[in-house]
Length: 422
Image 1 (tube, rainbow, N blue to C red):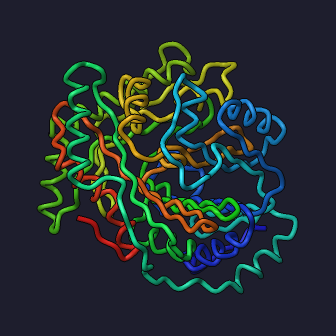
Image 2 (image 1 turned 90 degrees about the horizontal axis):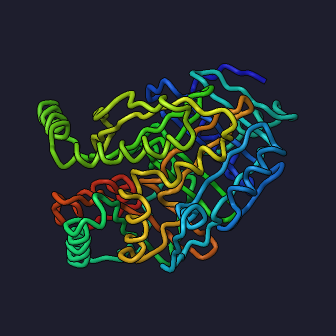
């Protein structure tokens, strides 16, 4: 069933409210950002026809078997801690969210939106349309939550300087050090909060994901890995700057970001790491950097984004290609294994879905997954609310500036929660 919609924003809000009534749903919104690799403006998947939930140990094999059985649309997520299945690593930090390490489902109903055209793929498409039309969009209200941090500012600065000692010794070159902000006994309306987050911070990979009583509310600007035909695309972000208060100031900040040694070093080191990761899946000689040091503007920040591509080697499956590059280099550091191992010792909570990936496999054998950053995670049963912020630590990093950058990255989340941190 294909329908032309006049008020697309209202339809999407109502469709999300409808989808959120199911045990599982996935809402992926490009927010009209120009993206040559995007297949649609918005995807909404709802209801479980079949699913796989896996723990660390055999998760990628279980997904591969599940994908072979279900060659159509799949949506799901990978947790960062799957690194422990790929490499000889472990995680002993506390996990207060209790999300699966991997979850994918075959949707009963699928909605694809391109421009003002809505396609409903389901047996009862007319009934779905009528039900969506009757939905009432939830009102947004800032929530009263008691927000805390695993690190005080002083603790954070001390820890960053300890990490820099490792860089001075040559243990690593760059790493991504993350801190968690959280609230116990928190009650929020996930749908209303996400809609407000998507208004305040529209990004190319805005995502609402529900698994039973657990929610992922994501305003990610970053693509982890996509496949288009025989082409793999990764777009790591390294380099962040605040927005200016005037056009002239904004332009000056972008120019400064594009020419700042520390940001360029961060970006190029991660580009090299991603290039290396892609060689495990690529036809020899096809890995190349399509764009280096591109500066892109979002509501809260400017970001430096590079694009690395390759041609997929024959015989390498989609799940293998993802495994070969997971976790994404922008959230690990280099050397990759050393950086991940080191951060487990300095971070104070398990990352879980944060630093993982959410996305889809499509019937034509393409896929697209984001990087889970700028994201609220919520376990509504245990009423635990969590979000992380990370920053790249290099030899030239200033610990206090890195702390301020963390707060900049979660500015939109703090705004929609009605909170502030200093």
